[in-house]
Image (cartoon, rainbow, N blue to C red):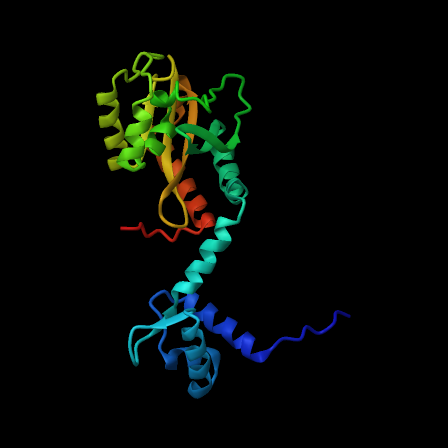
Length: 260
């Protein structure tokens, strides 16, 4: 027989209030909350005032609905900051890998190079893997384009000034001016597509992944032989990448609202 868990009633009620407000983004009035929780409005109001004092609950004005306060978001962001981000993304990456069966990379940019956060590898005999940890290939990588496109202009410019635009494939971009235009297009369209840029017969696609703060923190990409792109359309692959990016963002705590 399991021991009975003892809890503190007031804490139980506070948790119930927060749960109700979390399920109602537009907020709930005092009466609606009282009805949901089956509490007397006077009892509930005292709890809400305490939560307001700690910025866990907020109200725009007398009689207006109560909503979750800014301290809830601060706690959530602090929790995400200390999480293992690749581990949080693992399930979504695994699902995508099962569907496309190609090499998938979740990458970030540090020090002007692309670093892998997580990777799944195709079991096919013929496969393509991106080159990481070097600026030599940035101009040919879909993930690098996404990450560069969303950098502040000064940071982006500093990296571009050190890049060499070596021709590696039939469609490689070989000038900084053209590459800047391509980065602007990536930022506008929200994805990057590289066809035969890092080598003949190679395709790569990538989309951004946002952190809990709404900033582009990573890029999710797939690379594959061009001959297997016939199995998919580019829009279909981009759609699957985008859906997986949204799953990862949800796991990372991004609520879908970009910072303005």
